[in-house]
Length: 201
Image 1 (tube, one colour):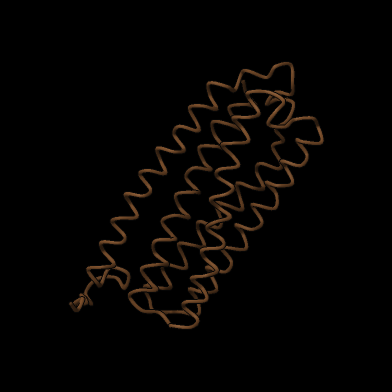
Image 2 (tube, helix red, strand yellow):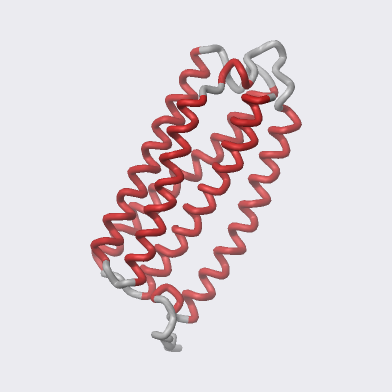
């Protein structure tokens, strides 16, 4: 059965299959919200259980967290520029902005890993206390999602280079943009309630 294209809609919404896939991904993000809500709840329950080990005030460094936050917020902005370029059928600009997005995401992962290594050197590991177990699981899950997004994005870039910009590749890019913005929102919650909350408690 042929899929009629509605050219009055943005490129990623022109086919019925694309609209269904995008709707399905919104449902997937609902499950992701449930996952992170559970991890946040677990962290907050365990956050005071330091077992004599380092606490939030002992570990968290404002400078490191701000660098990570800026990188991820800027990457969300460049991801939006990539989608804007895509809707204007500017493939080269879209690819350029999306490559910048992935590089910023890679920078975020680098600084997060550096932060974790510093914590371990200070004697703060998952085995040290319940607080640190909850902390590392929450942030590690988010970091793993960002890493997956980077790898996924690289594959999509290869597809666009090979196949050009069409309703299928544009739908895939739009879906990964939803995923990337979702991770940015999750990080805002981490930054606000985990880091800032831990520093002012």
